[in-house]
Image 1 (cartoon, rainbow, N blue to C red):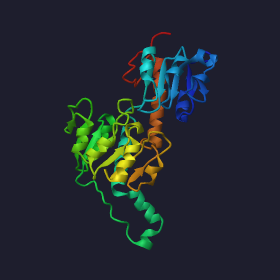
Image 2 (spheres, one colour):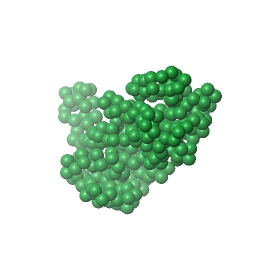
Image 3 (cartoon, rainbow, N blue to C red):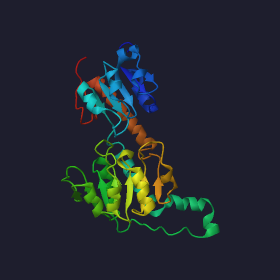
Image 4 (cartoon, rainbow, N blue to C red):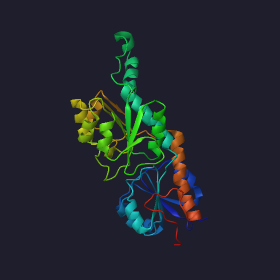
Length: 324
């Protein structure tokens, strides 16, 4: 197949190398530095029929590409892709669900244990030679024993987290807009109600205008002085300034975060707090899982142009390919 007949795929900024390798000779790959519409030349605009992205495709970029049919997002979250606008254009948006659920759930449990038992601090204590010079590491003031855990969000990843937590013998509850009929956990109609009923809150909802800063001062107060917050979904859901205040004042006891509002920038106040465990957004960051995600990005693009249907379209764009 010649370059003139292959569908052209735009990569705006960086992309996992495995995606590019998988696309192979099936597509013509065009690169631009960023998702800024000003990067689109007339030649690119005339060719591009698909985009491979790390969660950044604004409406303006879509509108600069008259022939655009599909946006393949690397990641289960696609809040950086204007899917609502894509729907008005008839452009399908895909993401990478399922393949990262277990990895993120495993990371969540690790982050929870790190936060409660201060395991990173204990390791640093040993490595610094303090076990020898100062004696045993101080007892952790918190434990998972006897805790009640509330899940803010109970989709695929939330369910995987809940199943792992069942093995620890903790009480489980959750808040979602609509209760599930396939779980035994108690459903709460509001986040505030959930926070009042539990002492540990795991935040796993997608980032959107409706979830922005929903985990705020009111929720921290409801959790109480023994409260712990674990954030693994999107940083935008947690009001970081209110979290710092809650931790500094003793309104809650501790927090563990893998995601932040302005990544990769983390507020220094959070870094300085000894009651916080911090990870650099590594929830799905294993070679095996990222390879699976890359394969799904590529497979969505291949399937779209070869069969007329994407494998994992997001709910806003359940489209099949029309002749163009």
